[in-house]
Length: 425
Image 1 (cartoon, rainbow, N blue to C red):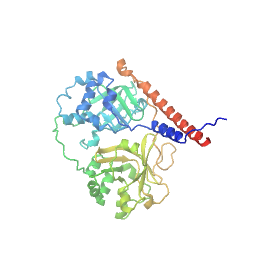
Image 2: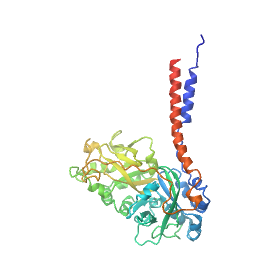
Image 3: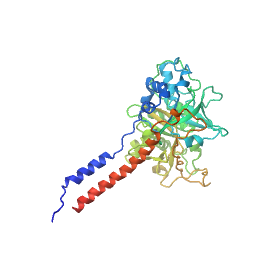
Image 4: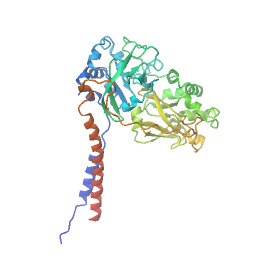
């Protein structure tokens, strides 16, 4: 009787081939390539390249681009009478550091939603004027984008969603070039070296006065600024509301000076991470500056992505990143919703907040962010030209992503079958 013999090398080789073929590619955003299929956005794509802003976006994710069509861009002389560096910051003002889908846009309240832009992260914006305020008129559904400054003359209307890579990138068209409030279009192209004043940056952010005061009083801010060299730093700074939410039983302010300094260092990673890097971080357990002082495997933070947002777990407190305060290599500063209390000082029991949560009215630990709705490619009340509202390949891309996921499951099943066959034979 014939006996089926299979070389023991064959299943192993097949498994390696299948696993390698199913690996995920590293995410690298080529924004100009995404815009290349839209002739009406060619001028804006050229500005992204000429100002080198496209290079700033290569390794970013979770962003929204507000692109200006040629007809609107050519009607403005801003692109022609500005210095290159000034124009670069204007273009950065059109990059929102948050992924927005059409459902997200439709849920924006009439009072508006403040969103950080790439320009805000340079540290050159005054106060929070590097952010944009997005509002939606409930009567007609028109969505407007403008400066958070009162009576700002610069504003634009969102026309349509033309491109989306779910939960990573969305591209909307707007009917005007946006200029930050108080921005000097003819500013010199020379920029001073970073040498970031961290406390000044936090004070300018308005909602970080408690953290700024603690940093100055403890003296650790000089150490943080010295660590800007080399691998850089990433700071998670609690908002003033986060300090106000601390229960009275957790007396952070009454800690000895040395322990208070350790808590502050517990909020800092000794490496520079963008928001996109944090969302896709490979090793979720990250040492802090407190780890370096107190010993390995202590005072670590667990960083993960929860429902589309960056979550930071200290072991007894879970916080979420609420905003980007500053982001320019080698320093990133993010606002967080909770004070990160290390279990090595405050014990292992979860810490309850002093304010009731809206959902159940009871106190509890930090709740994970709401799940974002799936992006839709349907325009609002405005109906743009057909080549803008129905771009080629958008629906096919969404279908292809689902097919890739099914394909990877099939590949894994094949690999398991090969292993099983090898064991049987």
